[in-house]
Length: 355
Ligand SMILES: *[C@@H]1O[C@H](CO)[C@@H](O)[C@H](O)[C@H]1NC(C)=O
Ligand SMILES: *[C@@H]1O[C@H](CO)[C@@H](O)[C@H](O)[C@H]1NC(C)=O
Ligand SMILES: *[C@@H]1O[C@H](CO)[C@@H](O)[C@H](O)[C@H]1NC(C)=O
Image (cartoon, rainbow, N blue to C red; front, side, top):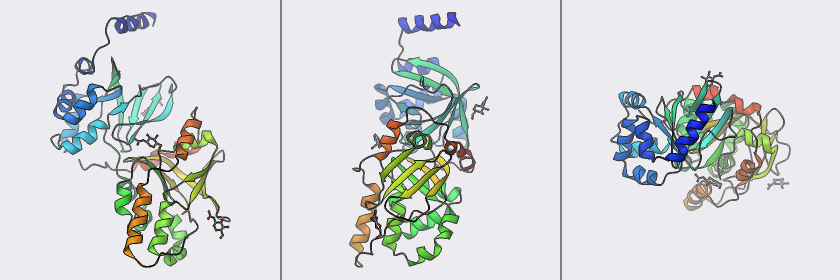
């Protein structure tokens, strides 16, 4: 033990190697040549600081054998940037054990598990990658992984795969499909089919604009609000949503994360059934009730108003980030019951990219 510590100190003192040298030392030649073929990624890596996950040659060979075409540069950039976590050297001192989330350069997260067996990564798809070797470089760490990391599915594909068909139908009926597909850095509360069935009568009376108002109240812009962070904060009052007229009260009652619309009396709070489901650039919590905000009357029939409001609201980024408060408040990882409910849904998911 003492010897290893001394050897490491000695190695660090004499030589902080470059990223390229670390990749050579790690014997990940396929990755090295893919990185070299992608000029955008190459440029970004020249000054990269953080954690780079490096699929082994065998891992990349298996991915190519399953249909991945590395000369599709858009796909390649998406996959490679999902392996880079800027400015974070992982594992951090605070994640001795347990689960945590890393935000990648691609914009989606990786769930990390550190336990007595080792370090594991879950990407929202079914596969779990294991870290098989670690190589320091001057800007951080290269971790060799035994499985290529594929970014999670889009929220719409995820919802379809996970059987949240009523949610998908409602998004399509509201004309929000395109807006939802381009959302980035948001948390979405996705009601179950049973939740939609419970409001079937109300839903029938809603205009398309009112349905948009309902759905946009389920989108929390400004980052990913993880269950553990909510639990640590206990309560997040007045969380803004993409429906500018509706904000949410989000709290942890010791067992469940509960969500209700601020200023709407009499409604039973929605309960988070499955927390922290990773989607492409989105974090999803599955909830057991549809949140119904106060609805304004439909605007006069005019295509302009309908076309303008939902997209602007859904992609708006200037609102105060209440989820940032949650993150700041979360200094420790609470053992939130809700955070543990992840795997059943994750196990049901297909890869988001057609490999
Ligand atoms: C550690 O986590 C990995 C990945 O989830 C799992 O396969 C393994 O069984 C875990 N080991 C222990 C000791 O819990
Ligand atoms: C996500 O939103 C938060 C809060 O606004 C911001 O701090 C963070 O930089 C954003 N992340 C990305 C990847 O845009
Ligand atoms: C919702 O409507 C009720 C009843 O009209 C009203 O008391 C409440 O203030 C409204 N809430 C919001 C957030 O507009």
